[in-house]
Image (cartoon, rainbow, N blue to C red; front, side, top):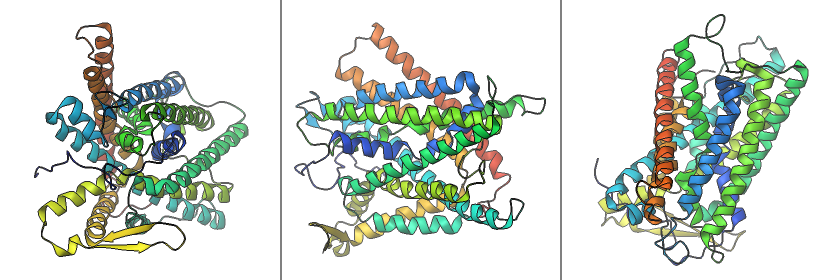
Length: 468
């Protein structure tokens, strides 16, 4: 792989661009990034862990995510978190505090995670659209009807839509998408919660066991149970992760007040809301379905009626992921454009920029061949990978394994220890190292479980021929 100079990567607008974000807009961005595909797998994850460990793990990951998010938000400015130089992207903060040797490692991890999230969003969108079609088919022809369909066409349509939206200038210009997506995430979360509550009331008893799905005697094998538990850890880790875009979100905040203060409030609000959703939905979903909880509670057909409400929930998921896709893609786009421009410095085609005035707003959209071609090719590649590996639960678990340790724990902890001069061997140093080691072990286990799940799924579904 050619070396890419990513030290100077910045969002569009220059160092002096006007920042208008507040703690509320940052909260909307975070909720948009966090409450996405992950919430759909929470009841299944709790089912693998059981009543004893399921809620504990959900709360534990929330606490770790909040703590490390505070550490990371303090790195936006360095050396002083109030008056220091801005680090406008994650890699800038790592370079400034840990040195250039860590930059390439951070950049590689960050962009692998971002691309993984986009693949996951594409898969989830297709599954939600398939669920809408199947729901209406079952309603018309009965639950025993053959209602299978391919998700490829839905992935292609989603990719075309994202190519169009990708021409928006930067993260601040997609704030309306974040608010719309955050609203949709609340909508389908409440729909899912309502459906699970109704199912629980219908059962008139709590389902589930203390330690989750049983081994043997009508359950599953010990090996499969182990892989499922590991995968559940990855799913829960993925459901909380947003550190990959935290610095970019913080760079939209106006000052005063200091950016880290606004971001601290946004972190607390967003994670508190997310945790309430996850614990409530995970526990009620597990109580309603027990150890047979589907991997995706709105597309796995744990519910068949009312079909129109299931349709609304899945449509809300699609709208939400349309916005979340752009939030996660914004840090990647300029990197690709800088890489292409560096290799074609004399290209007159790429140098031309066209401004289109928007008739309904006092702004203009800048279009260029460089932006159109590079972003389109990137989205086509993402869509192609999603069509090759359309496995929701396994992919979410693998994404969590890749994301959580390096970007949510390792780099924030390492930067904090340098920034605050934490003494080696002190109690604080030992605590942080223990946290770092714990996160590493969890992510390694989650990766193993998710890869095992993907290998098993490939035995049943051929690439480009996913039928549900």
